[in-house]
Length: 505
Image 1 (cartoon, helix red, strand yellow):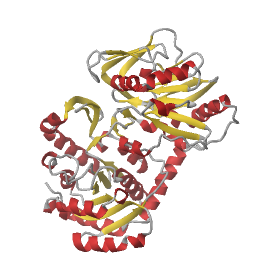
Image 2: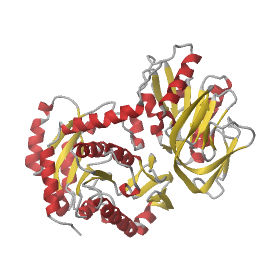
Image 3: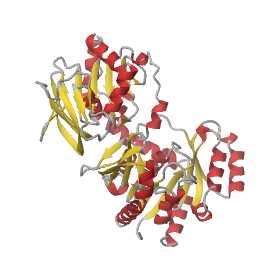
Image 4: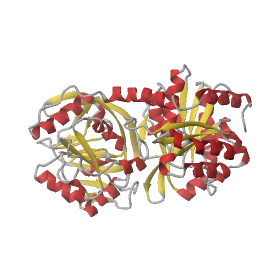
């Protein structure tokens, strides 16, 4: 690993903003002329990303690759953990399912395999790129896990990377969490930390200055930046913890009401991100039937465990409420991936891939049935979507362990070069597809929303914003924001110094 200069970002805990800051540095280094690549050795997430060769990695690393203006590969995230039921997860290795494992078994049996995978990927990336921006996970101070961890200081040692520790001031106790994390590190790991970043700051920086001085004197580590909170970033979130920030309270000033069903194993919820930037859309995430009300659009998103999540819909009463809305023709209902499977007549899992329930009746809103299979479909997709008398070229991606077939005549939603995808009811009030990212297609999204507006006798809105253009602008805005609040020259100096030390075994 002689060519690339690595740098690693770790956090005092989860959700401190590591992924966003890594995204920012991927764009900063790229802007400065360095061929840059993101890396996260092991990721646990249900929001995933499909590489150009049809393999699956954590969504954050895919987005970070976009920020670096490169194609994503599985070397950027060689190990992906996708929880699918209590205490068990699907382990994805280089983009393909490896096996389902319980946490204890994974920790004991996979450790050495993981070490070799990480070394291989770091070596591959170091031979191609000039900068590797590495993201940790959780906290490096998890003393009960550190003897066999695969994602924090062990990776920093492998790459000989300087580490920047990130604390989230919004959570409170940022100095205590930074100091405590540093004190719980082994001395050699503490020496690897070149400084800290305080993230998500709001308010008057002058009120923080005495604390910054105290921290530097007490901890002996410089504060490399205080990054103000940045709202409405329009860059994909990865962890479902972000859903806690979404409100179920309706914004009555918005003309269109969109309800997204938030079941326990919701996945790829970023499918609905484009609606957040539309001026007429209020997006609500729903966990209880009384929250559902009478929205214009109901979205059943992806699921890592379709049968168990559908049981949640039935037990919570949300399923019956959706059927009531359908009978009264109150809402358009769209299902994506697992949500599409739920729209059908039944779902079978004969090999107990996702659930102990081998079969369950669905909503019965589309004449389709699904069988969960042992092989996972992962691919980038494109085709022609026909809806409301119009046709659109659409792109998306598929991640599913199931095959869906019609039980009677059901018109496909999308025609691809290989097969039809999805289905729709005769009155086009119920729509299903395996295409994630379907709403990122601007022309289709505009006409869908205008169809909802027409139903409510509202004037159409044309020339809506391009979501992909908005994302690209967001990468630059994020980079400029972070660049303006960190000591970039000092960071560059430390990165170069670590390279001169040589490779740590």
